[in-house]
Image (cartoon, rainbow, N blue to C red; front, side):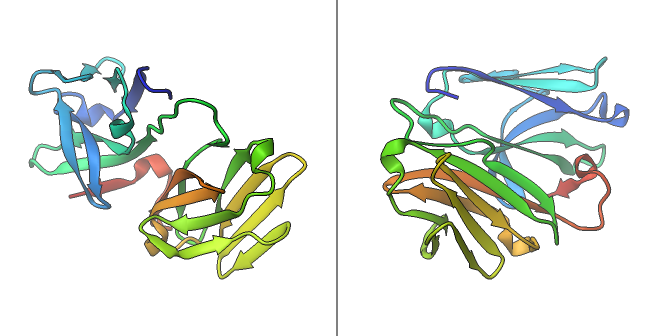
Length: 213
């Protein structure tokens, strides 16, 4: 998504939540978020609006005139009858770029269950072919794993470099709960954010997972 454009998000819910209040929240911590708009108040706040189509069991959020400060993780929320906010995991990352792109990521929101593997592919420009490539946890540059050669492994993380196709792949194996959070894919002086979301191993479908705060 580029600066100044708009983004439409579809949030589906079950029939039992048809008449409940719906929310759009900005992630604050791994278990809570701050409400931006909801269906029980004016349905537009700034450049964000929300609309509920109860017949189709879906509500829509439109974020317009996007700016760099909008880059973050957001959740769709439904309020239950006992006033506990239940949030189905629906992670959206609005990464806004401008100008030439020397580094891009195909899908920078990764979701998996405990014990599973997740991977992310990044694509770098010809000018970045010889630049240092690394994987870092956001806020802790000492955690960086630097790629050396075509394949580099440390603990549960593997880095693969395909210079012919200019693809940098990161694989995290055997997900653990403390893997959840933000990371950086870094090539030279360019960084791209990646979010890993870890769900319990004993749940069914990913869409059945509910996070309560």
